[in-house]
Length: 303
Image (cartoon, rainbow, N blue to C red; front, top):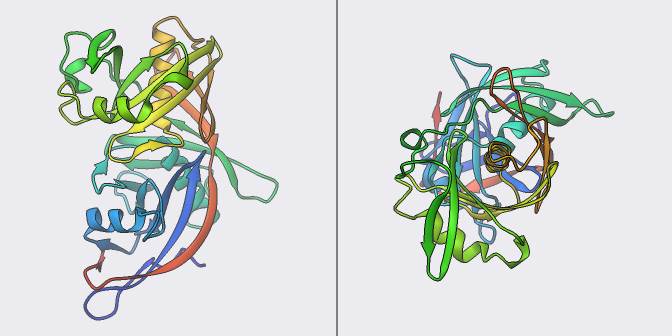
């Protein structure tokens, strides 16, 4: 497949073939579409259609690789429910792998425009000459309640009651809002029940991603995540960053680096003391490429 050509191919009218690449970052899977020369529409409906694991391709959403006037590339993310996300750590690593492996750039250090600002990504290559991992400068965490946003006086130690459960939530934004809940035993947590309710709790004006985390030791954290707009996923890069930051700032984890163990695999998170930026390192994997025939309601718009 030559990904230097546009992925969206429409005949007169709508529908037609859509080329795509399925990729995942430790199980956080998306359908990736080359939109450098044209983009399919309407995007919210397309994401719901393609993300369906029974009737579509299947994934946590879709990610569009677009041209940018301020960075090497631009990333747009639509969740499985059709809502647009501001940032995805696992997705940004996969975008870096996509553009290098498919010959859209020969640089192993790129800039990526997102709705949460420009991110800096450095790639490492495997023996096959393709990208096998990447480190993303995720920027500084946002800790001010109004900017997260969360309706609370302080961002840490927010008391929330869900049914009979009394929880303590720590709010952090890594380009998108997160609620981190530290637990004694992750295996006993009702991630579906609590995550689903916490995502839409009135404390979050724009909903939030919810992380349940168990501190194993200062160098290791177990985590499960309920993602805004997608439900429980195998992994969440921004969620791992938010969890690591909450643990580090609470004195529960080593600021020099911590391994976050998610259902889909591990991420390495560290806090740069000089810049205050969060650095995330993890793998990126291409699963398969293909084409799907779109119904007439979808069209390709030239960029």
